[in-house]
Image (cartoon, rainbow, N blue to C red):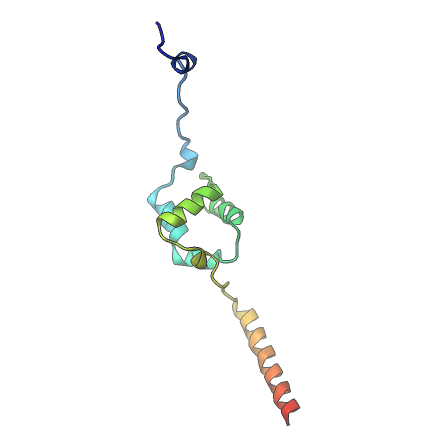
Amino acid sequence: MEHICRYAEATAGVRKKRKSKLRVYDADHIAFLTDQSTLQLWAGKTGKERCVLFHRQFPNKRLAVTTLRRIYAKHTIKRKKVRQQKHLPGNYRANYAARCKTLLQQVDWVKE
């Protein structure tokens, strides 16, 4: 068989790699990544940490940081939404409220 160009000659008989099923995402994977509760739980996490958390949730799937960014961009999730304020657990919130109250009392005491 005679090839017309060097590229065709070099790639003759070479098969293209199939896309691994490890990196094919279903609708439920995308829904999990774009869900409001997931975004709130993962607030303050880096892209790499989010990929690790995704793999823990779906052990048979892998996610790259660039793919995560593309998914967020496709679903119009902006950086502000990704980096929103962390949710405080109840015990931290109670401790914070108590400290604020004591500080305000101290400020009132100093004013008098």
